[in-house]
Amino acid sequence: MKDFDEVTSWSVLRRDGVAVVVAHPEVGLPLVLHWGADLGELSSADLQALDLATSRQTAPGTLDAAWRPSLLPQESDGWAGRPGLLVVSDGVPLYPRWTVTEAERATAELVVTARDSVLGLTLRSYLEIGPGGLVLLRHELTNDGSAVVDVHWLEAMLPVPAPRTTSRSSPGAGPARRCRSRLPCRPAAPSARPGGDVRGTTHPG
Image (cartoon, rainbow, N blue to C red; front, side, top):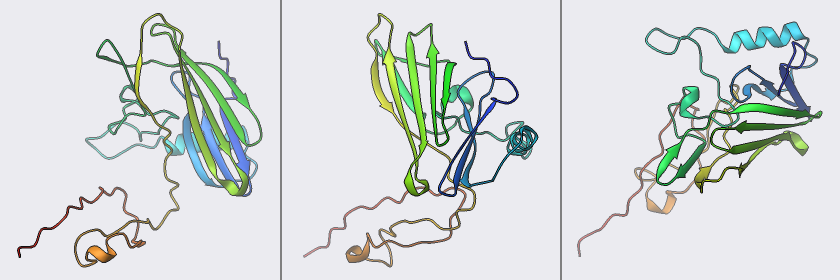
């Protein structure tokens, strides 16, 4: 049974000038509040203010509060994109409802164990800041139940830090021509950008 008090309701990982701030809600998996430059020493009041700031009100016609990604985004969290986990049993998709049972903290590492007792699934998530500030995330899924479960995918996803101003991509078809279709470029980073569709071209003769 997890029991996070006011002091341990957040985890702050830091290393080599990079910090990741994670909130531990009462229900569901931990949420990523900040990933970027080290914010320095943070008091409980500072962390609570950051929590409130990242759950700000959104524009009319959308969710009541800004959606914040968990360590494993799913439809049940309000995530509208590709879910981080797809598991199937007897051809039927399963939708785990995770309850965090343990959180192990270190200066630059967080290990979270969560379980769905109904489905018999256990999830362990490892979040770490490596040398140079590289943020690493991996998951382990264990089936403790009697039913056979097929894992279609289990993906690690983290939000892109807000200070990012450029993105790296390949222009593909168009002015770049085929010989330069994979030439890297760094346009201004939009809030969202779909991937391009590059197809071959057949010329007569």
